[in-house]
Length: 79
Image (cartoon, rainbow, N blue to C red; front, side, top):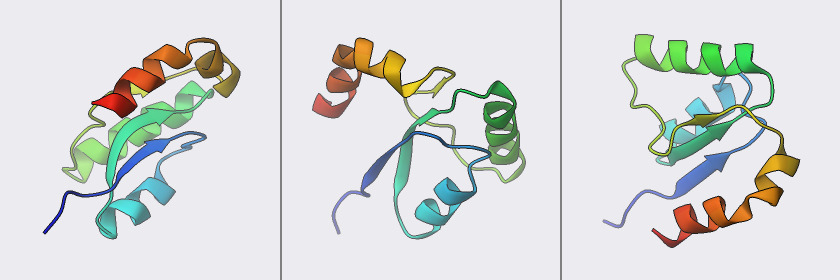
């Protein structure tokens, strides 16, 4: 069986859509939302559901900021 498909989650909110993807076999590698209370809820729920944290972490920035530092995303994708 192959590796799980990988998700880079933008506009993640509290992570409910991510949970749906994970229950279908996807792996959440990066989580981003510009509203920090959503990220706090995302982390909290993963701890209490005993789910792994995002491999590349949690970022609290806008998508525009990611476009400005797109080399960081490109490095993740190449791994």
